[in-house]
Length: 159
Length: 51
Image (tube, rainbow over all chains, first blue to last red):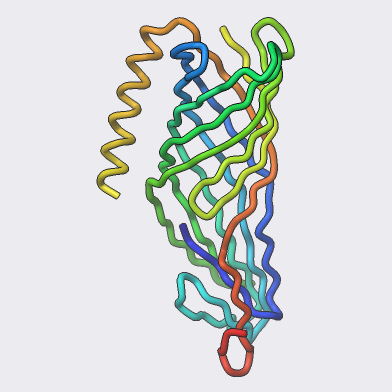
């Protein structure tokens, strides 16, 4: 994915919120296949005139005050393995593929430009889930995607 | 990359088949924090050298 590196005077914000919508099919008691849409949020770099920054090893310089924003989303499919720790708590692990899309936008007070990148890469994750009803679970999970780490809490419900 | 795309397409086809045949399905939503790994390097404004 597109990498953004700042100068010492530029401001880089690499954290944001994300969300995931998922649909899963339980193959057996301990294995499911999940299909998910991720919105990763965005990372931004703000600089003033003269600041130098690098994108994938190429150097650029702000010739006026401006902002570079990288945003991304993906469609992913993964196998989810669960191991029952207690009747109401399970550990889970996942491995899969993520088809991601990233957009880089550069904007100043009087100009803007953008470019896109995409790819397909491995993803992985580890987490815990707790039963909160006959058909529902709460999940806390870490996921690693290409150049992005996600720490999420959510729920799933069977139908 | 071509391998991954082929694997993804095959996985989606398998997923569709399994979902159709398997009645035990679920949906969900999660939210949280995302952290981008940009490989930060500081660059001197005057010289362009990384430090």
